[in-house]
Structure formats: C-alpha cells, structure tokens
Image (cartoon, rainbow, N blue to C red; front, side, top):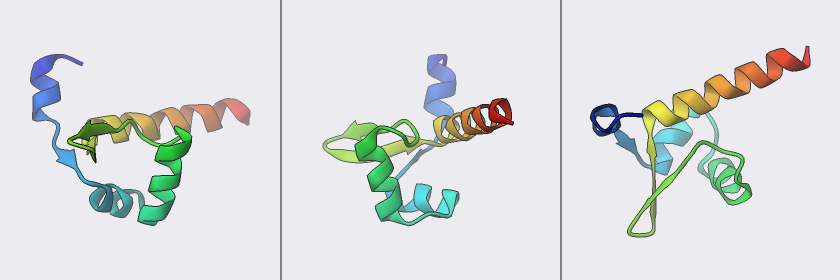
Length: 69
C-alpha cells in the first residue's frame, strides 16, 4: 500500500469495526488475541483498524472459502 492510500484509509476503533463486521466487540477482541482477525494497529496501546485492511481481510476469507468448495 502506498503512503497516500494509507493516509486516505480511515482509522476505526474496535466498536466501529465490530459493528461493520456485525460481530460483538468480544469476538473481535478474541480474534485479535488469536491473530485471526483483521490487521490491527496499536496507537498508544489502543487498537485501531484501517478500513481498507479490514476489507482486504474479508476478501481473503472469501477466497479461502471458495478454494475449499
């Protein structure tokens, strides 16, 4: 990802990402701890997510599921 694209992608907090993915914040937290959820940034110990990275993560799940069928 180039720096211009990275700067344009908004940072979301855990509550916003959980709502976007339609999961609970505890599920998102569990995924984060297991390393299976969307990529996370730590800013001063606070988890933040780039919307673009969350969408790429979702896309990778679609590809993985399609390969299994």
